[in-house]
Image (spheres, rainbow, N blue to C red):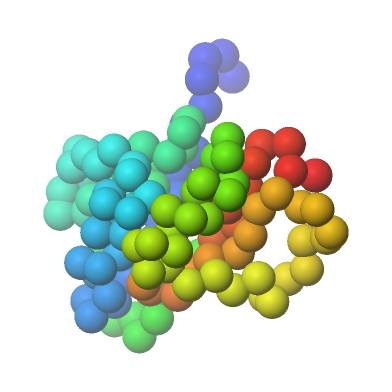
Length: 118
């Protein structure tokens, strides 16, 4: 297949966590939102598209994602100041790894890391 590939990640979020999750990606992580498939809110996630759908039939959401940063210590500081909790015990990353685990308000696991962290 010729041309660029855009991966789409769909996240289904229960109503009680929906707005906080939108706020997390827009205001804390700083992703650019778009509404091409309203009422879902989408975000540009590098070459990917992240769609966040409100899912009234779910009690919890579940997706693991990876976010890249050129400066993990600065990113970790920004996230901590925004009240984002680190959860590095979820999976060992190894000594000297330049990254860490966090969760968003809907308890979705994210690995935040520098591109060459391994």
